[in-house]
Image (cartoon, rainbow, N blue to C red; front, side):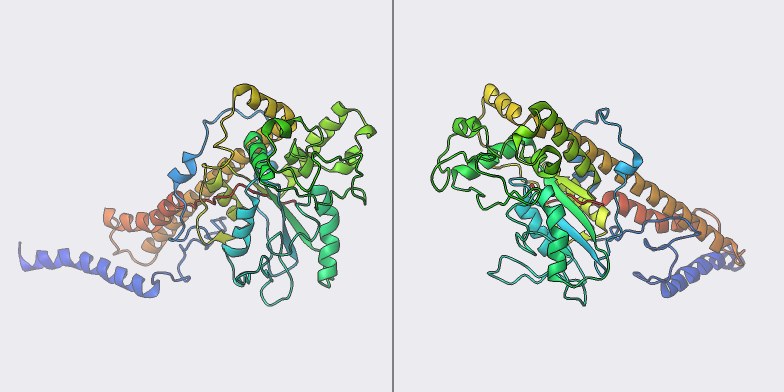
Length: 437
């Protein structure tokens, strides 16, 4: 090969190197000046607007799929509006997240995540030895979170949907002078009814009572006749499972439905206001409707998906991954089949609610994942088109063989691979986050 041939071969190689060096100088890693960063919108296309596609994202496809049950046809006819959950949560404005904490659903752990584990411009101030944290908006003395670990039990111990929706606006107005209307986003966690019931039994067996709960409805608490206690004395310590199941006024029965329903629709705790069948139908329908219309809820049994959906709903990121803990006190109870059936009968409304909630939750997860993957694919096409245009505009000498194409693939392929493989994990708790529009 003569010198002239060697020079002809070196010219395009040097040109490519020159362009690559120039590109690295103009668009260094981490720069926002280039067209194919994840937050950029190209040619009017709606690309990924959420900040989840960072290199430190701790989600993985396999992590999210490992806890998935076999996909079965849905029994419920959910619309796209039911599945599409994303709120423009304005932490600097007037928006408030309200956490409805149902007993033994993992709410304590999830509540701690809300105050200690969210990546914020102004993190909650949690001082050692104090049960509550100060969660203020950036630059303001106003709370953006209404929960046990931020505002305390301001509406009563484990306040339910009926109590919170009537109490929270009043409490917030007393705490803070407010001229603009607030947006309250209700969130909660649900748990498998049998596991939750057993966990509550073990908790009560150790001395828990929640007897200071107000159970406010239509402006008053229930009378002793309307809500008789299951035990005499200070608590129900040492109660056996049989004794626990035999108390007809035990609030553990169908607790999740009762705490999510509008109790004013059934005369609150006055059981004589209508027949039992009608009351149960109204309670279940109300709980399903309120749950569906909340901004967000999670399931104890699907921690990774719970974290994933919370982050996508509110455009907030957790610092550390949630952890799935399946070894609980409830899991260690050795149940016979007749006893299990009895618990399911006592919680037949919760069983139906959980079936509905699980179906909707998994469909929302699939909908959100598919949409995110579609956006990533669109983004990759736009990035490749932009690179192709740059190659063709005023640079006829730029090589168009596989070498140039591979650079385009890498520029677009990197974010796609990262987006499809990077997803968060979960928390040990089984509580619920439910938000209401």
